[in-house]
Every structure is written in C-alpha cells, then in structure tokens.
Image 1 (cartoon, rainbow, N blue to C red):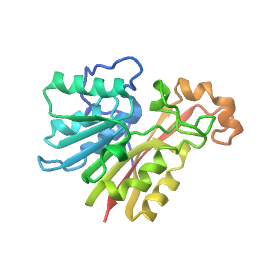
Image 2 (spheres, rainbow, N blue to C red; image 1 turned 90 degrees about the horizontal axis):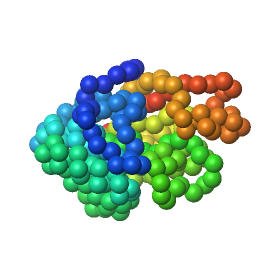
Image 3 (cartoon, rainbow, N blue to C red; image 1 turned 135 degrees about the horizontal axis):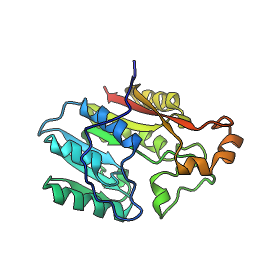
Length: 228
C-alpha cells in the first residue's frame, strides 16, 4: 500500500537557487522520502533527471553514492554545481537532454521530478522557468519519454523513482513502465494545495476534464519501478 507523507527531513537545507531554477517543494520532499528508503552505498550509481537545485542528487551523494545529475537548464546546472561545491560533495552535473548525455551508461537508481503540469500547446517550452513544469496538454511530455527510456538507463535490478501529479495519470505511468519490462507501483502519495501555476489555468484544466469545478488540491504520487 502506498504511504502518505506530508513532511520530510531528508532534504539538505540552505540550498542556493539562481533566478528561474525550480526550488524544492512538496513534490521534491515526497520524492526525497522515497529516496531515503532506498539502500545506497559507495558503489551505487545514481542518476537524477532534471536536477534543479541538486537537492535530491546531493541527498544521494551525502549517503556515499556516485551521482550524476542532468538538466536542460544552464542556470540549474550552475546552481547544482554551486550547491555541491558549498557542501564539498562529489557531484557530476551535465547540461542537456538526459538520454543524449547518458547514452551507453546504466545506473542502479534513477530519480526524477520531471515537468508534469498540463499546459496548452503541444510544444514543450525551450527556455524560461516554465521548462521545469510545463509538459504538454496531458502533462506527460517528459514522463512518457522517461518511461520508454527506463530500460536503457537501468542496470538489471535497478530502480526508477519518479514523482508527478495524479492529474497526469498514475495508472498510465505504471502501465507504460510495466510494458517496458519493469515492475512498477505507486509507493507514496500526498495531497497538497494548488500552486499559482495550476490556479492560473483553472478554466483551461476544467475545460480539458483534468480538474473538477472548485477543485483546489492536487494529489502527488511517487512511482517505484524495478528493472527485472
């Protein structure tokens, strides 16, 4: 049964964030708690997709894992590098598309808080802070790519941890990962108030059938998938 977690003490505090970089919020904290339940050791190779401030990558590095973090945003890359330097933690931070930058490499653990907010328009944003959350009309523009690429990213027995909004369809994510050869399930949930982005899109979300009238709380889910 999935656990419900509202608070986390596992994220590093005092992180710097350059302008436009996504700062740790409820989804980051929920994923950090899931990460804390995974066994890490000095030979564990970890990948974080969409690192932002580097909070999750640094949490894994502080536990002794060998961590690679990737982000399409140069400000995020710079932020993660600065935060790693301030904490004197070894962290390899790469700029670019996660699949291209990690081609040919496999990891014991992949952790990701991808963009997942439904947004009008088919194209994903190519610049600006919206890159951290806008993910196409159904919010699955990046989620589906990660599901498809997971078998190429993971070592046998490796684990993917992903957080996203229930609005995007947790069952669909589980089904896609299962079809790709992973054993997947929802392992944690949390319910949080809508943030400013969702509130600004209320009418559109209701028109698309993604939100009920007067709805003001969002379910977050963590999906754990193991490559068997």
